[in-house]
Length: 138
Image (cartoon, rainbow, N blue to C red):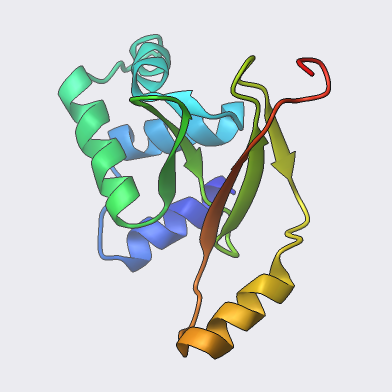
């Protein structure tokens, strides 16, 4: 996933700086939904730490390029994920415990096909968030 994200950055005409590589490595390594504060904390622990402004600028750029996407597990605090190569990501979020259940096989292909026909669009990717109490909180 890291190699794909780096290639997408380069294909968009941007250089791979140390800061950009570090942020991408953090997001890919942890394979989690991290807040900007969590990314900043991990970036400050490296042998070549990067500053707050650089982390935020990098997150903004990667979001603008659709390499990462913000998702909202809790109100007001975006968590960032690296979008897979196919541009599809779906998960279920429990509002009580914030557990995230990843949906690896995208099960909404039929709905996407219908939307393409109905609205005459070409879908290049999606981020689907479903909210519901997990089995432990019910």
